[in-house]
Amino acid sequence: MEKQVNVNPNRAPAAAIAIARGWRAALAAGALALLASCGGGSLEQAFVPAGFVVFGDEQSLVLGTTDPATGATYPTGRKYGYNVGDNCSASELWTQYLLRVRGYSFAECAPANTAVTAGGMKARPRARLADVAAQVDAYLATGPTDRMLATVMAGTWDLIDLYVEVRDGRLSLAQANEQAKVRGQQLGQQIVRLSNAGVRVLVVTTFNPVYSPWGQAQRNANPGVDVAGVLRALTESFNIQAAITFQGAGLDGRKVGWYDAASEVQQVVENGTARANVGIGDWTTPLCANSTATLNPANPDPTDPDLPACVTPRAGITNVNLYLWSGAVTLGPQMHARIGLRVQNLLAVLPL
Image (cartoon, rainbow, N blue to C red):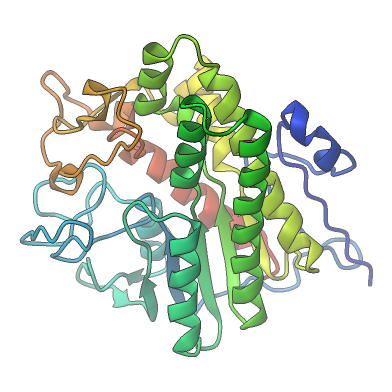
């Protein structure tokens, strides 16, 4: 039996071409899957998780009734995105979608007729890679149970931090790009740690922050900085190095699934046909009325401290699903649904 595994991060900046050269894989509808083949390449057995554990930042986070970042309390669980009143299961995050189609939910938001998953929610607001490592530390200390699936989506805040260092002249692009590779390696190392503990891992790549409302505001506020070029280089180096790291440890599609959300967000922003296919009509405006980051584009930290309380769209918005973004750097409900569908389809075909 021969196993063939290829990784080809979609587009490499000049600084990363040497790393990416020789890596080949097929990109299907923006999803990059690490596939392990046996014989004719047939699926040996679909992986059926016994529980889910979620690592990362607010792109994956379902809050309980208390926000760990601010201490704010809510009558029901909330999300860092659009909330439909106190119905935390409406306008799902991609992580909620992935669990719901399998009959599971999180303790932080558990609709009737669903089973609360083992493992659960470890993601935290504005988590950097050091925080993700701490999340993994805490989880592994508990002793993972059998047939667990971990989801990992992280890196946005590391990329923002590195961009600010370049923007403000504290790092050159070359220096920041090396740091992006280090952060990507750190992410890959967490994937390896989880896999070594017997946990299957589903990775969703972080998108380029330049496409967010915050990133667009940065471009407007800093005409002397190649904001797009800097963030593109950092994002691609980060995602490439994460893939190189875990594949270098011998992990393949039997252990890790990889969905390239970065490429899909890019396509939605840059390609009208892709936007129509996803159902996005506005890719520049945050739909939440209390998203403040674009009002202060010089602010390097788009914290949106009130975003979990977002239950009101901006004036004139009648269809929240048309908006790519909920807040400064948080995806909207339609894109979450898209990612949820993609990773669900990926999980159905990977021989994890």
